[in-house]
Image (tube, rainbow, N blue to C red; front, side, top):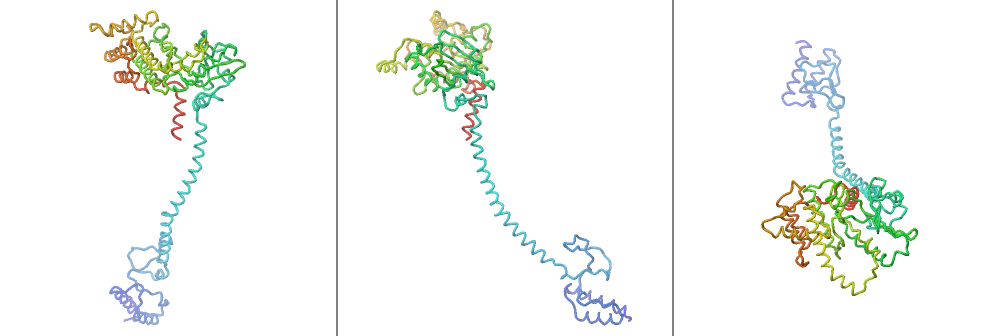
Length: 469
């Protein structure tokens, strides 16, 4: 046997021993001695015994990234010139240990550090947002609609005292006259955003003509009107009083479509259909009920179709201009006995509003003029139609109404009959009337209120901002 054959047998012996339970990290002394003898005989360049492992599979140079050794599945013999370094030269476990420690630190980062940082960020954000929100609430208000100066306070603080100069600018030096009456004048004012207001001024131009009684009536009316605050009422936005030049004014909402009287009887006004009239009826009912249920109740002194204005979208808006008649009367301050008598007459006054509401209902469905000289005949005709079984309210119906609903007309006829009872004690309350009408007509308070008024939307904005804060 020559030296080459002996070398091959030695290698095969080493592989056999390895297959029988040897490890790539275990070196056999017998194999080492045989290998040394063969190398000496063949005069081959011997490698150090430390670098001759017994491995199960031959190692090949790594084709990986350099971080981890790449294993090869290629078949074939070993290349003695390309022997991989021993396992001790490849630090697998130290790297795995470092990544294991890093994984633990990342867990601490995810579960403790990051939530703590997030909580601190949220706290800081809240501290920054809340002051900004408060300042935003302070700036989001009626002045967004063009109200300036003290007029801004109208929606927030009730009824402020306004400057004459501000109203003068809004009304174009009081040149824009809407209506002129013996006791008062109505001016139309336009704010910078296009919001329209009505400025009502007494015709009295001297403080000598303005008595103590006039001042008392003026201030009482301001107090009573400021408490109503209903969407179907021409609400008061402010007042103005100055001595030089003498001024007594009220600033009110502006309704552009004239009065209900004009719409029902005027030839130049747009016809109101059945549904539009039902909406007006319900708006009036809701508003009068609201006035009667205030503490103390507010009674309208002159409730008729001429004191009902219509908004841009045809909703009813009750207005009270009676103060301008009262301030010029020669009345005197009431005594205590007269005040007691006044309180006793409150219920009678409420019943008087119910009667007036019944007459307005009759005017709305019939389209007939309720002139004082003819009112009794109109009421008598209504009573006759209701009490006579052979006739119905259809005979009183406005002939221009082609789309009326019979069941609604029947209920309205019964309500009219209850309202115009000669004995005030037999008349129902406005709460009872409103409930009966709503059950038949089905128009809610929201549906009966104006939706297109800029002032209405301004109020809605202020209310929603206050609720949100």
